[in-house]
Length: 561
Image (cartoon, rainbow, N blue to C red; front, side):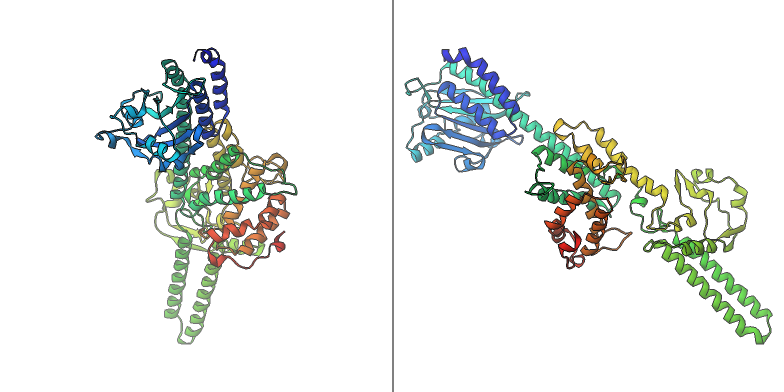
C-alpha cells in the first residue's frame, strides 16, 4: 500500500470530481467500488444499503474472478431485505448484520474461522461458483448525523503475485477514506429524493387546494400533465419535419412535469364563483331567482288589477278583461323565458337581444320593504342615498345598482345579462386572466434548482398565442419554447374535452378537433405541434383513457389537418 499512498490523493480528487458530475447513482457507486477494490486488489465487494425505515438490502455484489456482478433486486436471491431491529435477538448474525447493529469495523483474516458469525451467504456463493472466501473487511458508513446508511464489505485481498492475504491496517484506513465517498453519494441521492418528494408533495397539496376550491376544474390539474407528456413523447419521436431535432433531457422532462402540475396554481386566488360561473347572474348563487320573483310580483299585480276591474265592470266586459289578463300573463312568461335563456350564455346575443333586454329593464314594480336591512357594513358603505333604499319606491325589473359595484366587480343584473358571449363579464375575465400572473409570481418565489429553471417559462406561457395576442406577456411563437407551446395545446384540449364544467355541455371529440383546427388556422396554437397531435393521434390515446365514451365519435385525422 506504500506505493498506492503516494498517488492516492490525485486519484481520489479525480474520482470525487467524476462522482459530482455523474448523474446516474449506480454508475457512481460502481466507479467508487472499482477504485476501492483496485487499491487493495480485493477480488470481491458487497454493498448493503440501510434506508430510513431500518431495512437493510444488498444493492451490489461483485466478485471479479468468477464474473459475479449483480445490482439491485437481482441480489434478493442472495440476501432478502431484512428489518434490522428484528436481528437484535438473533444469536448468530452475519458479519454485515453485526457491523450494522453495532456500528463496528470487522476485519477478519478467515471468514469461516469465527463461529460467532453466520456465513451462509459466503457458503452459498462458494458452493455455487466453486469459490473460496477467505479474508474480509466490513465497513459501516455513516452520514452527517452519525446514522449508518450502508455497509461495504470487501473479500479476498491480493498481494502483487495474486495470493489471497489479510486486509492490513493501511488497507483498512485507505478503504475507509475511499468509502466515505460512497456515503456522500448515497446521502446526496437520498437528499435529492427527499427534495423531490417535498416538491411533489407541495404540488399535490396545491392541486388538492384547487380541487377543493373548485370540484369542476380539479381534474384539470391532473390531466394536463398527461396530455403534455403524450404530445411531448410524440414530438420527440419525430424523425422528419420541423420537429426532427427536438429533444428533451431528463431535467427537461422533470421541469415539464412540474410545470404542467403547477400551471394553474394561481387559481387559488380566483374567486370560486368566477371559476365555476355557469350563468351570467351567478355569484354565490344564481340570481335569476330574484328576477323570477319580480315576475311573480308583476303577475300578481296583473291578477289583482284584473280582479278589481271585474268587480267594477259591467257583466258584458268580463270576457274581454279575462282575455286582457291572459295576454298580459303570456307576455310576462315570454319575457321571463327570454331573460332566462340570456342568462345561460349558451348562444351569443345579437343587437336585437341587447335592445330587448334594455326595454325589459324599464319595466317597474313597487318595492315596499327597506332594502338596507340585513346588509353587512361593507354592503351599506356602497350605498350613497340611504333614504332611497329605505323608503318604498319603484324599481326596475332588471337593475344596475350602486351596491352591485364591489371590490372591482360589477354584479349589475342588466350589465351581466348583456354579456354577449359566455357567462363571464369584463372584470371577471380580467380576474381569470390574472391567475396566470399570480402563477408566474408564485413560481418565481420558489427557488428552483438550475435543472428546473424552465418551470416558470413552461407553466407561465400556456395562455400565450403564437401570433402574439395571448397573455400575460403577448409572446410570439418565436419567443416560446416548444414545451411551452405543448403546454398551451394540452391546456386547451383538456378544457375542451372535459365533461365536468357547469357552464358548458360536454363536446364530441369531432367538435373539439374542429375548434382546435380553427385555433391553429387563426394563429392561436403552434401548427407543427398541432400536426403531430393529429397525425400521431395523441387526441385518441388520451380520449380512450379520460373522455366519456359518449363523447368519442368517428374522427378522420385528415379532416382536421
